[in-house]
Length: 186
Image (cartoon, rainbow, N blue to C red; front, side, top):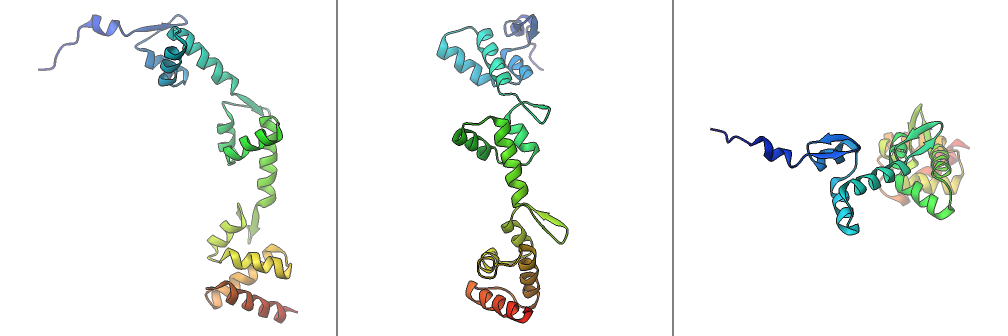
């Protein structure tokens, strides 16, 4: 037989913040999207009331909001996730260049576009990713890039054709094969 819970027992955990009643302080923090443990730690460290600690973290959360390309973002993290950017790179750029989050995100988007590769209609975020998907050794492509100076899509095309004929094992072997292909093309 389940034990009956006294109604007044749960009443002592109720918490009122800004005229709204919550079942507990934890539920209040969840409602406002802030961390309960952080609120309790702040309250303990600064010897303030729970209401003051919650207000502090709500204001802190609002101060992290940014506007980028006419859209309001809750934080740099959410904006970077949307544009598929590395949040740490954006924050490092902000720190090093002493620029705004908007400038750093814009720079990261430009950098990403500059390093994207389109090969046979498929977009790849970087050269190593493209080589991995084509099962080509990226070192071979880099060496070929340095020595021959062809456009990237030409190098990838030549190397992917070579791969179908013979597996690429060593860098030296790959370089020799690539030289022979270039000589045949001339």
